[in-house]
Image (cartoon, rainbow, N blue to C red; front, side):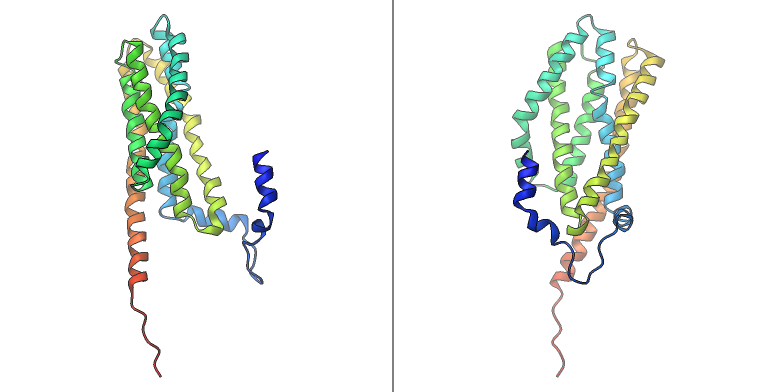
Length: 239
């Protein structure tokens, strides 16, 4: 309902993207532009592994808890509640804090929080420690998904924003890979070897870090070149 109201209110602004006489933007050209962006593609590849780490919360972790603890299923419902409460409690202060830094740095921090929290759950033996671990996981979740939208909005040109936001959705490939990888580890090692399950899971999340670091370096180079061009003196016209 809110979307319908907003589209109706700003209907006139939705048709001002193309100048008079300018050819309309074709879908294929838009996607090729996004795929050739040297900053966007490492972000997309890196966040595939970030999303993969987050997806283990819905797939590998509940199975591990149910197999490892008598009350594992009940405790997982508690973790779901803690996750929801933590998102509500921490999102606003975390976003305010993260806004002081580059969104890419926030993505890197979120990746590390998720990567650290996953193997911790393999060595904890108390439900309350699991809750604290879930708080750390939720901090990574908030930093990852909130600041990713901010980052895409910053790097995309106005006419390509829809394409960039649509293309970044391909990082949900991680949601497909997580149950396959985690399920295979559980079938292979079982709940009796938790480190053999969650250390590879954590390492698979860390694989995304090099891509995010590459994107940060390229974005810094792009920003620096833009700043240098803006500071170039304007040459006077010869008479």
